[in-house]
Image (tube, rainbow, N blue to C red; front, top):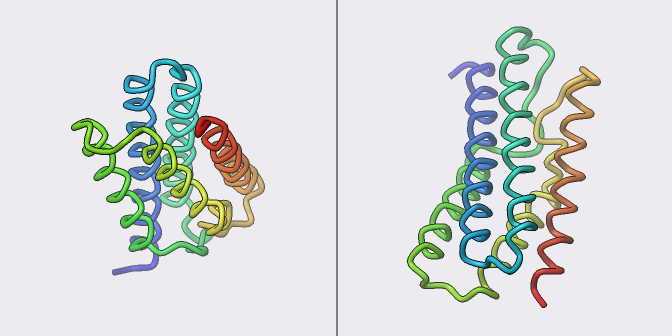
Length: 151
């Protein structure tokens, strides 16, 4: 597999992960209506992150020489995504308690923070570095919001 294809596959995995997170938050808005607005905000931000990765994908297709794989492997991103999808199904079935639902997703956001999602892809293109930094900042904010929902 070419380096460009590996890069595109990683970006696709990040996009899928952001959409899985958005789906989880959408379900939380339904399951925990008392905090619906917070969950919907998280969902909207994850959808925005997916858009960032789509924009990055387009840039890679047009100018692959401007991009390199950063700190995340596709296996790691796929594992996180599968975990989120599995917990979404458990939440749909009602087989996890609300406190665990929040703790789980806070841990997911923490793993993305520690992995430094802003360094997931490497580029010298300032516009995209700024977008990746924004995703990192939002992810840190998500964790803080989730911790406030634990009450």
